[in-house]
Every structure is written in structure tokens, then in C-alpha cells.
Length: 164
Image (cartoon, rainbow, N blue to C red; front, side, top):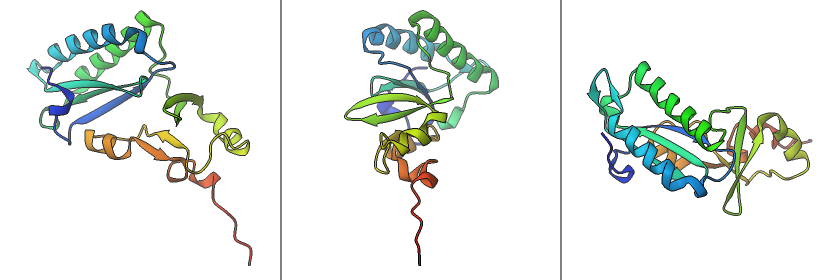
């Protein structure tokens, strides 16, 4: 059963999907589709308390209350719903070989393999904000959804060598 995202517990589990471009032109239709999905999303016939939000115009977040977590089949149904959004709107949402960089209020998606180069040419610096795909709960998303590159998996590329 759908409940507003703000009303979900901070311990609700979240799944994040980074779009390859802003979704604002389709946001109303995406919102309607996701709300309808959340209304019927269940686990073994038992309704789940679920919700969603769209952050930074590119990050779709599905969430389920921690008390009644989805099973494998219901998680599969959520991924199928995300695939339907990809097909309907020509989006890329499931490509985990891309990461999001947050610069000047906008998300830019880059291939993971390009980050070493982006750091070398200083397009990504230690304080550049990244969308953190490792968050697991609503609270983590709120607190650590954006992290500095130097605090992420990229930290090793910013380590300075101290010469004695």
C-alpha cells in the first residue's frame, strides 16, 4: 500500500535508480505509474507499506517499510516496473556501470571507468559530490545520499604521498 514518502520510517529500505537524463518532462506520468505500482506492491499476498520519491530530477527511489520487507519475487516485480519505465520513456535506469556526480545543482552521469581520468583533469575533485549508491535506508539516503568524492570509493585517487 502506498504511503507518502515523508511518512515512511527512517529505517525503510530504499532502492535507487539513476536516470541517464532528467525525468522532469515525464515526472507526472512517472509519479502516477509508481504510485499505482506501490498501491499494489505486496509480498506473498501481504500488502507492503511502500513509497517512492524522485530526487535531483534523476534519482528514482523506491522504498518499503522495514517491518514488512519485500521477498525475492516482490523485489523482482519492482525491477520489472523500473524496466517498464525505461522502455516507456527511453530511459536508462538499471545501468550500474555509471555513477552520478552532483555539480551546481545538476546530476551528471559518467561511466565508472572514466573517473580516474575525470580526477586527473580535475573535473572531479576531492570535494565534488557524488550520488551514493550504497545507501540502504531512508535515513542513510537523507544523511549520506550525497558524499564527497574523497569520502567515497574514489578516495584512493586523492591520497597524497608524504615524503620525509
